[in-house]
Image (cartoon, helix red, strand yellow):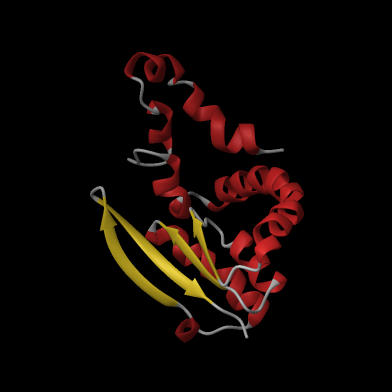
Length: 148
Protein backbone atom coordinates (compact mmCIF):
# COMPACT_ATOMS: atom_id res chain seq x y z
CA UNK A 1 0.00 0.00 0.00
CA UNK A 2 1.04 3.56 -0.63
CA UNK A 3 -0.45 4.70 2.69
CA UNK A 4 2.88 4.93 4.54
CA UNK A 5 4.58 6.77 1.70
CA UNK A 6 1.75 9.15 0.80
CA UNK A 7 0.19 9.82 4.20
CA UNK A 8 2.78 9.16 6.89
CA UNK A 9 6.31 9.60 5.52
CA UNK A 10 6.81 13.37 5.47
CA UNK A 11 4.95 13.87 8.72
CA UNK A 12 7.19 11.33 10.40
CA UNK A 13 10.01 13.89 10.38
CA UNK A 14 8.03 15.79 13.03
CA UNK A 15 7.49 12.77 15.28
CA UNK A 16 9.76 13.97 18.10
CA UNK A 17 8.10 17.38 18.13
CA UNK A 18 4.68 15.70 18.14
CA UNK A 19 5.64 13.63 21.16
CA UNK A 20 6.92 16.73 22.93
CA UNK A 21 3.92 18.95 22.17
CA UNK A 22 1.23 16.27 22.12
CA UNK A 23 0.00 17.63 18.79
CA UNK A 24 0.06 16.18 15.26
CA UNK A 25 2.94 18.40 14.12
CA UNK A 26 3.57 16.33 10.98
CA UNK A 27 0.09 17.14 9.73
CA UNK A 28 1.40 20.56 8.70
CA UNK A 29 2.79 19.00 5.52
CA UNK A 30 -0.83 18.94 4.29
CA UNK A 31 -2.10 22.22 5.75
CA UNK A 32 -2.95 23.96 8.98
CA UNK A 33 -5.41 21.40 10.30
CA UNK A 34 -5.83 20.38 13.92
CA UNK A 35 -6.74 16.83 12.83
CA UNK A 36 -6.45 14.90 9.58
CA UNK A 37 -10.24 14.73 9.39
CA UNK A 38 -10.61 18.50 9.06
CA UNK A 39 -8.47 18.43 5.94
CA UNK A 40 -9.42 15.04 4.52
CA UNK A 41 -11.57 16.46 1.76
CA UNK A 42 -8.80 18.89 0.80
CA UNK A 43 -5.83 16.51 0.75
CA UNK A 44 -4.01 15.96 -2.56
CA UNK A 45 -5.73 13.30 -4.69
CA UNK A 46 -2.95 10.71 -4.29
CA UNK A 47 -2.99 11.13 -0.51
CA UNK A 48 -6.78 10.81 -0.38
CA UNK A 49 -6.64 7.70 -2.54
CA UNK A 50 -4.06 6.09 -0.23
CA UNK A 51 -5.95 7.14 2.90
CA UNK A 52 -9.24 5.67 1.71
CA UNK A 53 -7.64 2.51 0.32
CA UNK A 54 -6.16 1.87 3.77
CA UNK A 55 -9.38 2.76 5.56
CA UNK A 56 -11.62 0.73 3.29
CA UNK A 57 -9.30 -2.29 3.37
CA UNK A 58 -10.45 -2.85 6.95
CA UNK A 59 -13.97 -1.45 6.91
CA UNK A 60 -15.02 -3.35 3.76
CA UNK A 61 -14.48 -6.64 5.55
CA UNK A 62 -16.57 -5.51 8.51
CA UNK A 63 -19.41 -4.01 6.48
CA UNK A 64 -21.56 -7.16 5.95
CA UNK A 65 -21.56 -8.01 9.68
CA UNK A 66 -22.19 -4.37 10.59
CA UNK A 67 -25.21 -4.20 8.28
CA UNK A 68 -26.54 -7.44 9.74
CA UNK A 69 -26.25 -6.05 13.26
CA UNK A 70 -27.63 -2.60 12.42
CA UNK A 71 -30.67 -3.94 10.57
CA UNK A 72 -31.44 -6.80 12.95
CA UNK A 73 -34.25 -4.71 14.50
CA UNK A 74 -35.42 -3.06 11.24
CA UNK A 75 -34.60 0.56 12.15
CA UNK A 76 -36.46 3.33 10.36
CA UNK A 77 -33.71 5.91 10.89
CA UNK A 78 -29.94 5.58 11.17
CA UNK A 79 -27.47 8.28 12.17
CA UNK A 80 -24.01 7.72 10.67
CA UNK A 81 -21.71 9.90 12.75
CA UNK A 82 -18.48 10.60 10.93
CA UNK A 83 -19.93 9.32 7.65
CA UNK A 84 -16.78 10.16 5.73
CA UNK A 85 -17.14 8.97 2.11
CA UNK A 86 -20.74 7.83 2.55
CA UNK A 87 -19.80 4.20 1.95
CA UNK A 88 -21.63 2.87 5.01
CA UNK A 89 -24.70 5.06 4.39
CA UNK A 90 -24.84 3.91 0.77
CA UNK A 91 -24.61 0.27 1.85
CA UNK A 92 -27.49 0.94 4.27
CA UNK A 93 -29.68 2.34 1.47
CA UNK A 94 -28.93 -0.73 -0.64
CA UNK A 95 -29.70 -3.01 2.31
CA UNK A 96 -33.05 -1.40 3.11
CA UNK A 97 -35.07 1.08 1.15
CA UNK A 98 -37.26 1.75 4.20
CA UNK A 99 -34.65 3.38 6.44
CA UNK A 100 -33.70 7.04 6.35
CA UNK A 101 -29.95 7.42 6.68
CA UNK A 102 -28.46 10.63 8.06
CA UNK A 103 -24.76 11.40 7.85
CA UNK A 104 -23.25 13.82 10.35
CA UNK A 105 -19.77 15.01 9.48
CA UNK A 106 -17.66 18.03 8.64
CA UNK A 107 -18.84 19.99 5.57
CA UNK A 108 -16.01 18.74 3.33
CA UNK A 109 -16.78 15.13 4.14
CA UNK A 110 -20.50 15.66 3.51
CA UNK A 111 -19.62 16.89 0.02
CA UNK A 112 -17.49 13.77 -0.51
CA UNK A 113 -20.25 11.54 0.88
CA UNK A 114 -22.70 12.77 -1.76
CA UNK A 115 -20.59 11.41 -4.63
CA UNK A 116 -21.32 7.68 -4.24
CA UNK A 117 -25.04 8.44 -4.05
CA UNK A 118 -24.92 10.43 -7.26
CA UNK A 119 -22.97 7.64 -8.96
CA UNK A 120 -24.92 4.64 -7.65
CA UNK A 121 -28.42 6.07 -7.61
CA UNK A 122 -28.05 8.85 -10.20
CA UNK A 123 -29.36 11.29 -7.61
CA UNK A 124 -29.45 15.02 -8.06
CA UNK A 125 -28.58 17.65 -5.48
CA UNK A 126 -32.26 18.02 -4.56
CA UNK A 127 -32.39 14.58 -2.92
CA UNK A 128 -29.95 15.69 -0.23
CA UNK A 129 -31.32 17.53 2.75
CA UNK A 130 -28.44 19.41 4.30
CA UNK A 131 -28.31 21.55 7.41
CA UNK A 132 -25.25 23.16 8.91
CA UNK A 133 -25.08 23.55 12.65
CA UNK A 134 -22.41 24.23 15.24
CA UNK A 135 -21.38 21.97 18.10
CA UNK A 136 -18.43 22.70 20.39
CA UNK A 137 -17.36 25.61 18.19
CA UNK A 138 -17.02 23.41 15.12
CA UNK A 139 -19.15 23.45 12.05
CA UNK A 140 -20.75 20.18 11.13
CA UNK A 141 -23.07 19.42 8.30
CA UNK A 142 -25.86 16.91 8.18
CA UNK A 143 -27.13 15.27 5.01
CA UNK A 144 -30.11 12.93 4.94
CA UNK A 145 -30.47 10.41 2.15
CA UNK A 146 -33.33 8.13 1.35
CA UNK A 147 -33.78 5.91 -1.63
CA UNK A 148 -37.16 4.72 -2.64
